Amino acid sequence: MQVEQNPLRYALKACRRHFWAVGLFSGLINLLYLAPSIFMLQVYDRVVPTRGVPTLLVLSLILAVSLIVFALLDTVRIRLLMRASLRLEKIAASNILHRIIGTGGASPAQRAQAMRDFDTLRGTLTGPAIIALFDAPWAPIYIIISWLLHPMIGMLALVSSLLLIALAVASDWSVKKSVAEVSQRTSQAYRSQDYSIQASEVARALGMREAVVRRHLSERADLAKRQSDIAGNSGGFLAATKFLRLFLQSMALALGAYLAINQEISAGAIFAASLILGRALQPVEQILNAMKNVMAAQNAYKGLDHFCRLPDVTATRTTLPTPRGRIEVDDVTVRVPGSDRVLLNKLSFTIEPGTIVALVGPSGAGKSTLLRTLSGGVVPDEGEVRIDGARLSDWNPDELGRHVGYMPQTPTLFPASVHANISRFRALTEGGGEALDKEVLAAAMLAGAHEVILRFEHGYDTRLAVREGGGLSSGQRQLVALARALFGSPAIFYLDEPNAHLDINGETRLIATLQELKARGATVIVSTHRTGLLQAVDKVLLLRDGVIQVYDDRAKVLRSAPPPEEAREPGQLDQRGHAGEQPRAQGGQS
Ligand SMILES: Nc1ncnc2c1ncn2[C@@H]1O[C@H](COP(=O)(O)OP(=O)(O)OP(=O)(O)O)[C@@H](O)[C@H]1O
Image (tube, rainbow, N blue to C red):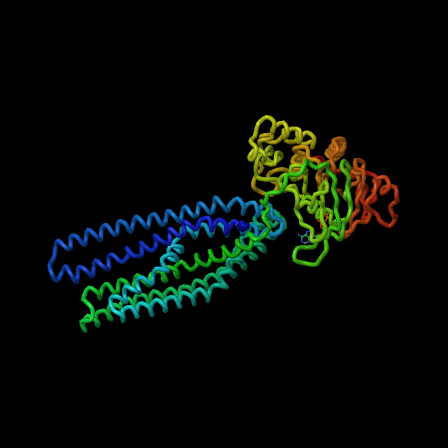
């Protein structure tokens, strides 16, 4: 039997029993809905003509019991749907979150949308839309009963149902495209608004507030216009449906009266016909009322189903031994997603375990892209990266991540304590304790971050704020990120400009850290624009426009004299990776 890879479909399949039960209960509920109509029929046709009070009592009792059972079944039906919603959360949420956090094949926007889509679907499972959908298939019962009352009443019920269904389909068809467009634009607008909130300080400082507000206002005005167009359109259909339902219900009464005058049906059947027809048309009206939710759920399902077709990042892989740190890059090409623009062009090189390599080159050369590719953040379009002979895709990402110390150019710390950040949230998966504290301290000390952290308001327990920078200076963030990279003594390090915000003391300390890593036999690739770090490295890899210009021993690269026409700041590497006269002094560590 083929195992379902798509977590959404798998979870929905796992809820199949709930849905079958809800379907069955819906059938019983809809049968019991007939009780008041039958009661009315009996009262008019049996009780009134015979003046049978005992019969009335018995009928009232039967009606009361039927309605109590009806209410109980309705409660159970809602509970079943709630359970299905919880089950969906239990089965699929973890896998979807893993994909959102762990997949490289989707844009940030798609990933942000995926969980919202999932919540929309879960919400729909407990809302009125789903009840209407489950009631709709039972509408034929009412048509059959109407037919039993009289074929003409049955015909009226059938035609009325078809009319209302046609209206529902037309309504769906007329707004479907705009609803999908508006929901996409709404999420884009929220994202761009979030971004502006983050960048509001810059906007204020540069006098851009008015312009930024105008930009969002025009986005909002466009959205509001589209939303009101949709609401107007759907409102028209809804009003037409209400009119038709009330009119047809009265027509059923009129037809009943006509048939009664001709003595084709009883007096009680007149009212029963009207009630039953009303009930037959109700689900269609309910669906139209809940159309917005139904469409949102449809779009959410489509989006999420598409997202869940991306490769499963939770797939189990064979555990490989701790890597020694041999990195092979074989013919790796990386392009801008969805474009032909090449960022890294057929790169091939090998780094032996225990080697420290400086990655240099002008801005935009592709250094960060290369480090992101090595760390698995970017999947190459061609070629492959191997660690100790195994392709990156053969490693379990979490297991390999434990042996990797990656420090991105923007430190990206999480809004949690400094301790939790450095320990990579290890306490959540393996529990905290003294051993973990020791490891955190060791990493912070090796990074030269210990004294800096002790000066924070609550030391290692200082919580980073949920805002850009988390309340730390750039240099402090970089030190904490370096400590996080060093945590757990990894075998491989990818450090992206770790000295960009460090003062001269910080840089000296970083050189000592690199030397310590070398002594431990770690493999390090460190990108830098400054000459200071070069004294601690074995090799230099010069990248320009995504192509390797030079990859050789440090001594050889530095021996070749810089061309006189390329003037540069002292301490700054030139475009060919050549060093200036002296390291550039930085301001005090912030
Ligand atoms: N997601 C992306 N989409 C489009 N272009 C990208 C993307 N990521 C990087 N680039 C482009 O790739 C090129 C290399 O960028 P990268 O950040 O790797 O350079 P870098 O050598 O690290 O530069 P710097 O020294 O300034 O940090 C740049 O031209 C950049 O515009």
